[in-house]
Image (cartoon, rainbow, N blue to C red; front, side):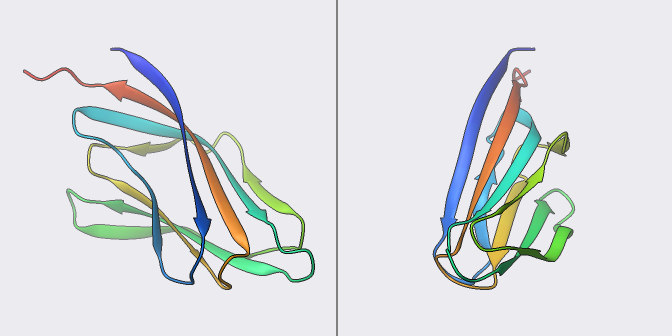
Length: 113
């Protein structure tokens, strides 16, 4: 199985639930590490992280309203979040324009047939 390493990121410009990464067709993916960075110099902000299992039409919380201090970060190393094709990783901030989310992902191609 061929493997490729990629990054995905999103600056959370609203308080809406935002798609950060969708596993492409013919792939599975393992999110190896997650960084949530608070770029606001004065205020803390909360982060909620979720993933959607599209085959089950269900969304699950990974982190719920965790506070990230001003000019600080939340790091989830060795995350090992496994996604199948079409599954989605999402993030939601309590304040617009305060948080960024970065993912470090290992994608595995699943040959057709």
